[in-house]
Image (spheres, one colour):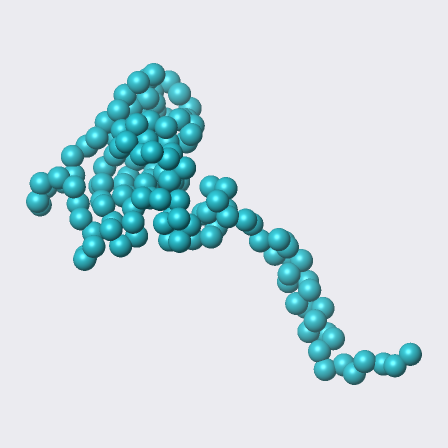
Length: 145
C-alpha cells in the first residue's frame, strides 16, 4: 500500500533485530515503517527461558535503546501471549514519531490503557439503567403540584 514501506531488501523478509541481556532476548519481526500513521509497527518476540513473563516497561526501555527512540512513552506494546510451555512470548508493538501522533491515531481505549487518555466517567450499567428510566418517563405529562 501507498505510504507503507518495509525495511530490508526488496522482496525478502525484514531482517530480525535482536537484543539480548539478562536472559531476555527481544526480536522484532515484520517491521514496517508506516508513514501515513507516523509510526513503525512490528511483531515483537521475547525469549525468556526460566521467567514467567517480562515487564512491558523493561521491553519498552530495551526497544528504545535498539531503535534510538528519544521518548520511550512513544512506544506502545500490547497483545502479548506466552507460548505453550513458556519461555517465549509474542506480541505487537508500535513506535510513534511523537506523542501527538500517538494521540491522534490510536483508539481511545488503547490510549486509556497506556495512561494517555481518560476513561469514560460512568459505568456501562449505569448508562443502561438511566436510558431505561428515561424510556418510562418519555411521553408522560408532568403533573403540577
